[in-house]
Image 1 (spheres, rainbow, N blue to C red):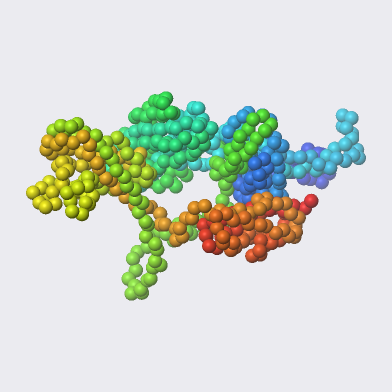
Image 2: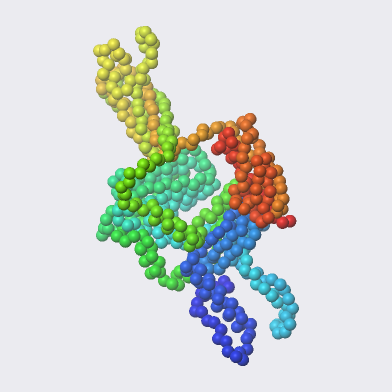
Length: 581
């Protein structure tokens, strides 16, 4: 049943005296299977409906949990019980070279079972046939993902454009295909490094035709700079734009200039324009119209292998030797949401629609929340000058304040040297202009200068400039600076404690149903041994306050966790594989 064309539908016509053959019974099965599968594909979609998570048990072993999915021809894939496998035993392992990443896929597969003797009708020397066909699945590894834009219906909403893909570095731009006028949209840049132990930077300027930025500009300046060397990293940059009224010229986003730098080598980016429509109809109406005008045959024949990508693995592989570093489940978000979930989401959306203001006299008490705490940094910059500084300007090198990218407020002051003639021998910081204190008991020896600061929010850096307002005979100017950044997230109610760790031993254990096992927790950096245990799955068994775990009667992979009572942010997890031997 590997074909994609299920129609036209033809069923048996029964009448008295009809001789039924094998073909008739096969057509009977095919008729009902084809109708059900075509309905699945067009009305439900393709992807994982429930379960099928992949858990990394150790650096060489994974566990596939129970689950249900639909493939791209509407066929049902059921994993009836949890399966534990060495990755080296999965189909396709030997075909993958020494790469940094690979994908674990699942696909529909039929298996013949129950070999029996044929009573009559010996055919071509055969007298044994399989009595049953089991609808099953196969797991396999692949090196690359095919047709990723069409794995979900997101290609109707957004456009993915690869700006750069070489040397283990890929930069992808994601832009909307349609935005209703006066509505916001997100332009996204995804920067992925795979096995590239070099620093990189990326910059470009995007002209937004028919859009404005939040700063009322018609262009976006993108800048990303790595300060430390990382071999594997994924960074997402988001930029918000607002669609203007429907215009007559081509709307969209034009990359006017851009470059990628890998260490000392710079590679220019090709200028290109990605169209984006602006209109008066809603996004739902736009997507519906696009889907309804697509050719029926183009929808049915997607192309590529019929498979679901369950996980992306990052590993070190050399021949038959390998060690898995991490696993990312469902890298392309191939999910199918049930009607129950969609109804709940729609209900939630309706609840957050602004309602007309009602006039109450009821007093409402809001829960108190901790206010965001600002981040601060400070330092001193010494700016070298000429000995005869005759009304000139001098500038510092680019300074990193250490608070990351974003808007930062910077305050500066001139630092005065300690005056030995001063009775209290005090150090002074002069904010603003020192000319205010001339001819007063508080006069300083500092030259009269103006200080300016040039900030680079995207880089997380700034530059200080000083301009002399009178002749001075100094060779350096010492400037103190303070940086303040508003924290976007509330601070945690507890303090992060360094040096305190805990772990569960062993990290993974295999048990039979209803079997008991006592886990141990190992603390480091604290004398407190008080902790609380928890089983994360609702039907995953139970564990008492001493770490004694009792497995459930149902086979599967279950996760337990332990948390320090004194330090609530210190946690550890372990896995239990429950299987009848």
